[in-house]
Image (cartoon, rainbow, N blue to C red; front, side):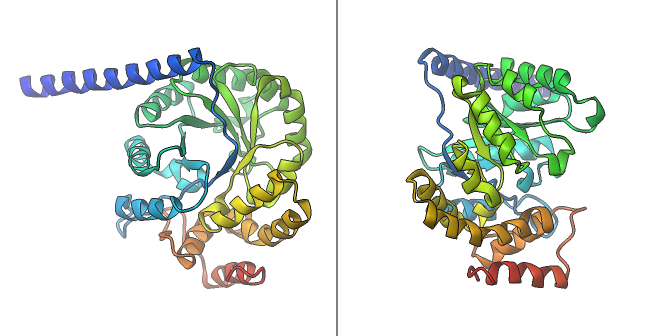
Length: 330
């Protein structure tokens, strides 16, 4: 019993030291007047599993070695494509720690820390910072979506940002949550010194353009949440994208970014058009199982999803192959 108590005390002291270091880093960061530059392309990386549905850290690290050869700005870990709702808190944190150890210097690590309650989100955000996240991506809580109005969401994100040791990026993904983060809430939250930007996966370009316009005095950075509207988002002021398709066609999306940033719009349009169908296939049409199948075709470890997500049917697999091959990718 004494040994157990001693171990718990040591663990608590270690954890406190980690969080204190993270807080000191945040304070130094703030006092220096610096602000993370989010511009660029990020894959929201998948989580490989073994046949027993355990996280396969060996295959994860092999994927990371391949991603290190692509000019991404960084990686998003424990986003929707990482199947985060199906992982335990311990697994979520350990995946982030694993990525941090493998990530090349200069690459940003954005970790998903959103939970349904504000309290749980605050606690997981602290753990993600201690695990090495440079910023956290916080999804809108949605189980009681009828009550998630601007007042509730502003309070939620403000409390998370107030206590977070690292900058916060808002995450609006209405296809999964059933609600958009309201425009008025985004505009108000953009004034918070520790809220850096927004990943918007809704695909409403007028909304993205309006958010950029209404937050332009706040140095608020908007990221497109899907490759299907990446060029359009750049046109209205987005600074980059967190795109599922980057897990498969990462170099091509980085090239699209380069074309947009350099104003080569005719070339960008041709490339963007070729990316729309495969992107739709691995997102709204067939989802994470399709993304993981496509990863296998392109030399990455995708594998099976964690239950209850099901593998593609034969007909779905054939459709997925058509969506890639008809656009010249397979």
